[in-house]
Image 1 (cartoon, rainbow, N blue to C red):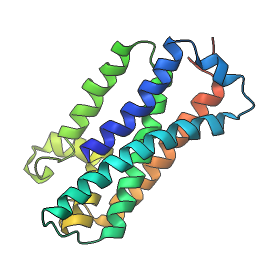
Image 2 (cartoon, rainbow, N blue to C red):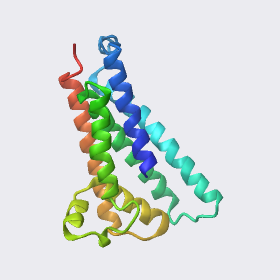
Image 3 (cartoon, rainbow, N blue to C red):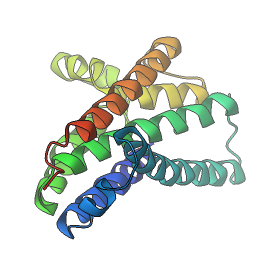
Length: 188
């Protein structure tokens, strides 16, 4: 899951920031494409990168003998998570003015969320303050939904995790599209 998140965010964020820094973004903005179409093109690119990475890792797991409890849900979760974090990457890329700002978000926001999301342990092992943070952490729900779909075990109910990641995806997509529409930090 961490590979899916990292690749989806990095693809869209770095693409947007590079276009801003090289000043090729104005050429894209004058095309007869709507903000929605421009946003979706970035998001789809990041989603494909994150999704392909996730599926390749899943195939390697299957090749070494891992049994997937629910393959359809697993593929769906990988897709939704890639879409969500690709949307987040687009927003981060739109808001960043330098590579330092971009890496600041990835290092000091995404990495701690991953560690508090239960990637390496069960969140029930955390102290109360850590558990409280995990319950509002979107990475916690993405990890637990994937863990349940692949292994059948989870720290949160599967249905609520699925609802959370779909709503999170819709929220981030809306945020990225609305930011593109507003032109904030992307218009010169």
